Amino acid sequence: MRALFERLKAFLGRYLRPEDSVLEVLSGVIVVLATVNTLVVTRDRAGVDQLLGASFGVAIAWGLIDAALSLFGTVYQRTAQERTIRAVRETDDAGGLAMISGALDDELLELAEPETRDAFYRHVAAQARLEQPQRRRLGRDDLIVAVLTLGLMFLATLPLSIPLYFLDDPDTAVFAMNVMGFAFLFIIGWLWADYTTLGRIKLGLALGCIALVLAAVANMFG
Image 1 (cartoon, rainbow, N blue to C red):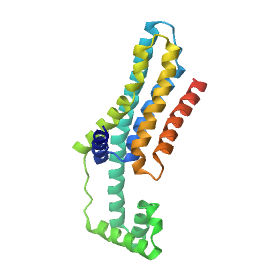
Image 2: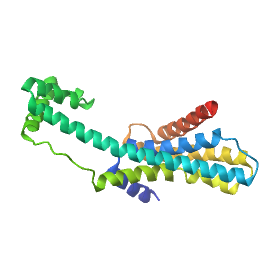
Image 3: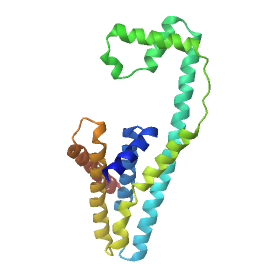
Image 4: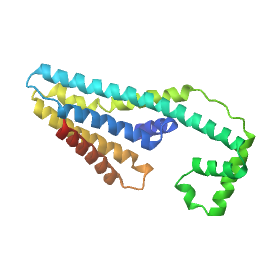
């Protein structure tokens, strides 16, 4: 089982950053828990079926929105990079260096000595002057990222629907959904802790508690 999870993590890592895949799963769980907890739960099977339809509908809708935003973000990032390269080519050395330093503003670069960091900026600026900016269109990998974004959002909701199928009492089913949501995110945190400096138990508890707290907040204002 662990080998299967490791292969899944490796596949997702080819297209999504670890924090992105975790956030998609976390968002899917929160959306479903918040939706179900804020709905007026009826005492019949029809009400439970409505809950199922509503939770899946919301998950699919948000998955499609996230997928579209992912593609939009990719296009924006690439056009911004193209615009920066064009601007560097059209300005003087000092202006180009300032643009590159602004575009590459990264916390890790702050660890470098100022001289080393400035030399890196100058190297990138020089390369930008040599490169002809090209417009990169959306490709196969970009579409895979969008599909994975939608898939993670939707698949995160599937385990949570089990209590609504097998428990007749809606209140008990919703309570069970919250418990399963916590357990599901605890497992995700346990597996994804390798990407952080946090312990497995600590990250698992953090993800589970975040989901329940946000679902409770949504319930308060629902």
